[in-house]
Image (cartoon, rainbow, N blue to C red):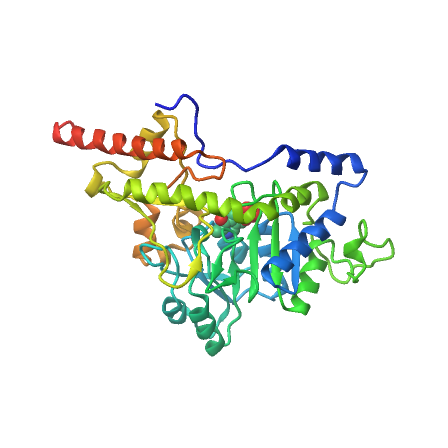
Length: 393
Ligand SMILES: *Cc1c(COP(=O)(O)O)cnc(C)c1O
């Protein structure tokens, strides 16, 4: 057994990263300023988007974007229930309704056909999720949304560095990335919205900081000009420089980080191929670069003799951490009680919600760590089989 605990995720932070944060702390300017502008420019350059806007979290940007797009009471927003519940929550908080689509059972991605079928005359927005770092089939989804006249807001929280048919996610429609510590790169907490839409960008920038007027010089200066006036009441969801500088340091390492995650994922895929009942997600069939944000398996009790909770307990007893990404949104208590119409309607989502489990995958893991996880999984599964054969269960 491992001597030390292996968490399912740990941010990759170097001594140089720590020194860069310390430099900002010593600089006398720690809130939004030049480091945020630098991060925004780097993300715009990388994705090819005209605008990149940093804020305090991906969730905050989802809120700002929904408000800027005018989503409100009476509107429907089409998206997957199989996502982090922060997105459906923001839709509800705007007074709009989530219309959930089922996902593919093995990729957890929503298809263009499922989205097409969910669109009604009340649909004001489609939010596809690039799950675990794999891209949705965005060309097909764009074709449907163009035909039905509905805009797209990509939930790219898992997908910084993901490519679809050779193009970086975030350069097309409006997209939101998260820089939460679990994500492939981090600013501690934070998020970035990318868009080519000038009006939307201006509105999100304004709502991000009290609704104050934004002019072209504001970004490069420390704070907003003292004469700036409120154009409409806004929020306070800006990203501090002491956070931005961490992501500024990490972004140039993103490709190396993804390559390392890919190597760990390959060890898992090879090692788990012959373990019955432990089913990794499948990769999409369209051309892509996977960001390998999460390594997710489904624990199929009928084939391996133990359920997801027992599997997680078994790994924990062997000093290995796991997570669940995610319990489907419509299965959370508030949604069960207030939006009960979805229960039972999303079979592939519910099947996965009861079985998915994230195993450790982060760039600072060693190959030996990954092989150790495979061995521990085999032990846990073999233990369950013995117990079943012995008639104890
Ligand atoms: C992390 C995450 C978010 C929200 O990002 P935060 O920066 O944590 O607010 C949204 N959607 C998905 C799928 C996520 O995993």
